[in-house]
Amino acid sequence: MTISARQAAKPTTPPAPVDANPVVPIKAWAVFGGVCVVFIVFIWGKWLLGPYTQTVPSGPSDPPTWMKSVLIGGQIVVFSAALGAVYWLLIRPWRRERRLTTDGILCVAFFFCVFQDPLTNWFSPWITYNSYLVNFGSWTHDIPGWLSFAKPGAQAPEPVLWPFLYICVWAAFTPMGCYAMRRAKQRWPRLGPYRLIGVAFVVVAVLDFVLEGLVFMPLGFWTYAGAPLPIIFPNSYNAFPLHEMIFIGAMGAGFCALRYYKNDRGLTLVERGAEKLVSPRRQNAYRLLALIGATQLIFHPSRTDRRSRPPVAGRRSKAFVLHRSSLRRGHRCGLPRPVGAAAKARTFRSARPRREARRTRWNDTSHVNPL
Image (tube, rainbow, N blue to C red):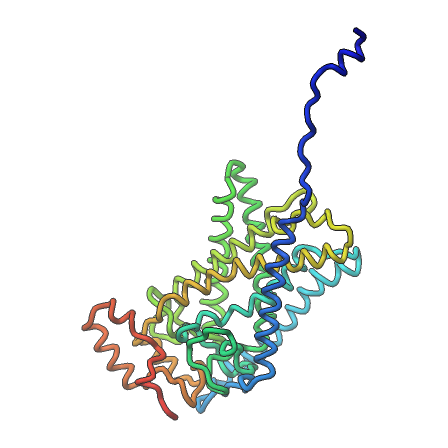
């Protein structure tokens, strides 16, 4: 028997199975992202064509002059910074190399994340933005199942330029968290994924406390009048709840992990398989929708958990908010509680169990100011 005949007689190893459809992950994420985009655009369109685009006025007590200047200047700075980020991260690479970077796509994804921003007020107001900011009401009443009080011109407003704030903040926080993860990996090479994500969590939580608790809230951009204890800076309109750091830190850690863990082609976990698509336009479209779906999924738990618990009423910081009509959800109606009744509620709250106090609903219609 010749050598060739012996080789032919040996059993051959069957070839490894080839994945017949390697683009299923990105297709699934793109479908989910497409559903989210369609739903968001539908709700926004219904809101823009409906009666709830009426501006929520600041009420009889206008903010002080310094706060007005800060609010106006802040909106200009936020809008300009967002345009700069979009140009640098999205438009500039596209014009030079005809490709979409991950950071550029994330800018678009963060823009759509603002849709979930007011969901914290699902049952009753937790956070209210200063109505002196440019606003056209909010789209919350058009969301199916919305329970919190809403009336044209008297609801918790959503500033018009807030989508651009989301682009600025998260386009900065996410690279900072990824930078901290890289430095931690260099310093401690044995750190696993969970600990690296924990590093990002701590970094983003601290950044959120500095930006919200020390900058935006003292300047009067928004207030957490209905947030639960524990809080920092009590007895003031800029009382900062500690749970906000936890939720924002967890959300930012998810964004950082999504951006940090890439393959050798520079694709994130939800973009795997995009290189198998033939058309570059189809690749960009699938990547965009996939990242939008992933960011919506990461963002949602931070709003869902706060919706599941009623806010705490009768705190002294709420009385500070009641004196400032621009920080309420409309001065004509929907007033949570008169100042005198709020003082009585504080006295009564100290005598009753804490559990009963936490069950108090801020939007109880029995103490709504009809004016």
